[in-house]
Every structure is written in structure tokens, then in C-alpha cells.
Length: 251
Image (cartoon, rainbow, N blue to C red; front, side):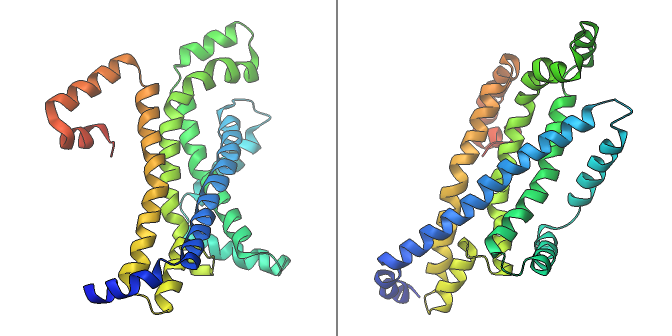
């Protein structure tokens, strides 16, 4: 096997294959960044609607809850094919990439909405009641009291979800989207060793996900309260690097 790898490496790492892998990497990154950004925006709206207590908005709250509960329980691959068949029935010329992007937006909206809702609900109720007593109103209470404090709880798991979704975009290869996993399959089908084809894909997934995971760890430490930060440092000293990873939840 080693002889085969040495023989194929110069042909594998040529200009055209590297461009091919780079374009697939950009598609994977675009699916994650654009899809999760739109999902975060839509999830923020759903979480804000669910945070209201107005009787007039009760139908919207029920619709938001129904949407989140349904899409959080449907596998991403199933959503991909449902969106594929639904959109192609309406617009047969739609690209597979746009169909995958819509699917990412649908499922990321549901999951990120729950993350945002948990962050909003982490704000002490007394502060919300104090803002209401000052006649802040619903929007001003969210903008000036709830959101500024909720970001500390929302951002770290939101970034972690984005890192996870970089890997989940590989499911889009099942419907023909030329992202990293599909590119690895194509290179192997051209006769290259699977170790080279999927090894290159593995490295590129790492290149995409590692900076985001470190950013999530930085945000978690940066946004943590001084007391929790000191506790984390103490646990790191006592348990060492391996124990710190297990206790702190960071890679």
C-alpha cells in the first residue's frame, strides 16, 4: 500500500485536483456559514416570538413550537430528500446546491432557535419584571435587558452547532452536491487510493472545523463570568490537560 501511495501522490496532488478539492471545500463552508447564519436569524425570530406572553401572538407561538419540534426530530438526510422532491416538483431547474442550502436553513433554524431560547430564558426573571415595571415594553426589554445577557449563553453552543454541521453537510453528497465527501468519492472512482482521496478530505474537514472550534472555546472563556473562569483554571491545574478536556467540555 505504501508503494502505491508514493506512486500516486504526484498525480493526486496536481494543480487540477487541488483546485477541485478547494472548490469543494468552499462549497462545504458556504453551506455551513450561509445556512447557519440564515438559520440563526430565523431562529432568533422564532425564539423571540416564543418568549412573548401576549395572547394575540398565541397562534404564532404554537406554530413556532410546532416547527421546532418537528424539524428537530427529522433526520437531516430525510429533510434533504423531502426538499429535493418538493422543490423539483415546482422548479425542476433548481440547482442541487440551492436545495441543500434550503435544507440547511430549515434544520439549523430549528436547532438554533432552541439554543437562543435557552439563552433568553437564562436571564433572571426578576430583571425582566423590573424592566416591565419601568414600562420598557416587550421590544425594549428584549433589546436592552434580555439579549445583552443572553448572548453569553447563546454564542458558545451556537458556534459548536456550526462546527458540528460542517460534518453533517457531507450528507448532501447523497443527493449529488459536489462538496468535500462527494469530491473524495469522485477522486477514488478515478482510480486513486481511498487513503489519498478520503485522507485529503479528512484534512480539509479538520482545517474547516478546528478554527471554529477554537473560536467557540475562546468565546466560552471570554464570555464566562470571572468566578466560572477561575473555577475552570483551577480544574485545569488539578486534573491536567486530559481532565480539563473532560471537565471543561473543550477540545
